[in-house]
Length: 433
Image (cartoon, rainbow, N blue to C red; front, side):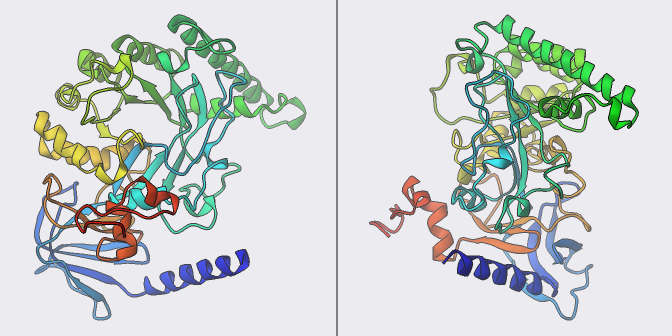
């Protein structure tokens, strides 16, 4: 049975690739490229997984062999980038230590998890899959493209998961990581343990540099140190869970001391220290919550976070932290930001190109330009409207979600049970489907 499923998947992938040999043209839509002016009555042409042309329907030629889709009345928008997700049923570090940089979430992700269908129904095409936040350092994240996948390699941006950098490094401070030994019991001890580990990593890097490629002089291989050297060298970005203003400043001090690149995640009290974040030149990925509750250290979270950060000149992105925010509802984060005072442009960038920059993937994703990956959405209306639905999600020129398809529709509207192989209730249709 497994062999049959593998064969069918391979056949599907081959047929999809063959279909991409012909260009696809989407004509008549309003196109929001993010980097550039909105195009009315636009034309988007994609082939071999890439965007080959974009512009006004009057100015761009439709290839003679193109498959043409009438998108009149629709809005075409770049695929959404989620900079902080826990989809894929993965797990990170265990209780043996508070700092586990050698752990890789890619070793624990289930590529067949139906959670990814939820993300696609919400227009997410790229996500940063994280281990949890219960550790000071819970391990290496994985940047995933939501392609059809038989193995984790099919979803990764990197080519060689054994040797390449395939994601960032997840760190956390605040109450999540304060526990009994071997975890820290206070905030001060948390910072001290992190500093101690980075000092060790600096010493390890010095030994590697001194060896100058001579295998006989190389230090004993240590997987945790290898990962941290990548952090010190700027090859691996730290994605740092933090909430309170004092915890945020602790992260900025550590980043300055050791010179690592960091994306602040959550930053519930960013509005209190927006100036300091801006002066540090650090981006912030924030979450927009639509209901009260949660942990005490996030009690001062505000929708105005995005406004304060934008005004201070910080690169701002949004994330779901799914399941804190359901991936299917992610697009409304931009609308919440605008409602609180963000500019429309920066709010839309926060869903797309800003997140791409935080993952070092801006050359491939985050906006609609010739040469970039053909990741885009067909929306029923303006992206900030509460009435707008994601009608189609395309990943590298492949249609990965179609709301008009009943098998896809259930993932957009069904309850939790639909993601566990059960029946679902459609509130619009009434009854169990």
